[in-house]
Length: 158
Ligand SMILES: Cc1cc2nc3c(=O)[nH]c(=O)nc-3n(C[C@H](O)[C@H](O)[C@H](O)COP(=O)(O)O)c2cc1C
View 1: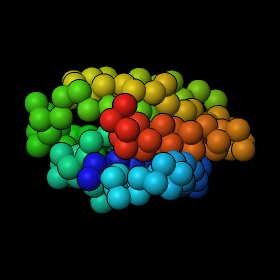
View 2: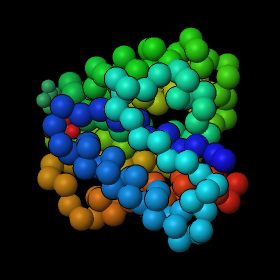
View 3: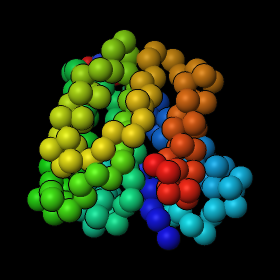
């Protein structure tokens, strides 16, 4: 059984709605592929997740709002906590990022990428930035992100 770990933080609602859509897409893809017993989908808030969750994950989807041109403090706290337990042990595992932002989002993406590149994770999808109000199109892209990762793990094609 493989594990897809979705970790996110929000003090609001937008990134949570994006995370829900990512999870929904992942679960739907597994049902459609009749692969529910092949991939476990785990969803945690940053403060609930730690090194053991990351070590147990075959792929990671990281979600955060952009705050002050950076990832949220809680996402940074999560990455700081998992660094020593995980560095050198998760090289090559696929990841992607989803960001809820007002007008930019690129700083949040870049700040996460800088750290997970140090962990030698492998970017497997361009990710999703949701600007301003969430639209059905952005939520559909979040669902597609989850589906890509879940189906990719099930098929060994990620
Ligand atoms: C303290 C703070 C800082 C923010 N900084 C940025 C920023 O640098 N760039 C941006 O595009 N939006 C910024 N925003 C807007 C949020 O990223 C945006 O409202 C986002 O959708 C919030 O997601 P959430 O509902 O999951 O908290 C900021 C909001 C707050 C409260």
